Length: 209
Image (cartoon, rainbow, N blue to C red; front, side, top):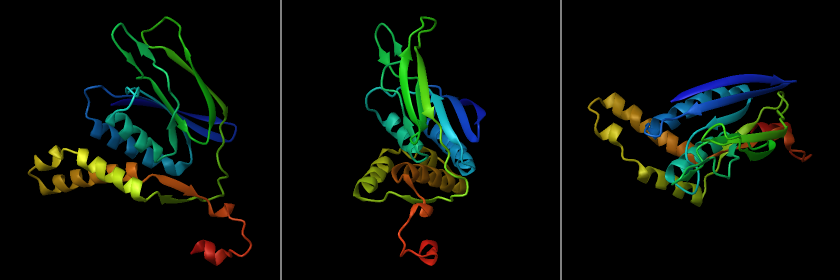
């Protein structure tokens, strides 16, 4: 896994652009775990993220689903819907861009003939950071569908890094990392801003509770 990032300050708004490479033969669990650690660390600093990375997201497959579920926990949504690499015997979408789902955008292919990969032109109409004085609260979606998704993800795990390990501490840590990755990607976060509540009868003490 390789990645580079640049921090841009646009007026009073903070944007981080990530460019991430994952080898097709690399360990997907390791990749998702490291990605989760990075975003979990930076999420507290109230940045907007733009993620550029490679994984075939054309059609439906389990790897695509796991990636989208993980990024969805950080309010990131995929923007690509057209193939970016067209070869003689294959058509793939392996150049992906994810943006904060609060950002309005347009995206289109930019075929320049300089590479076997087509370029993409992403236009952001506005990058908006919520008021820094507002402290959001988070809840997770827990319902029949998300519980079924959680159970499905656990059933896909092979648990090789646990069953093939002789160290009980490593076994526990590997189990916990896998369990939490499935948990966080299945039960996605929803931001609740208590300062947006305008009901007059809801007093400060009720909001705190």
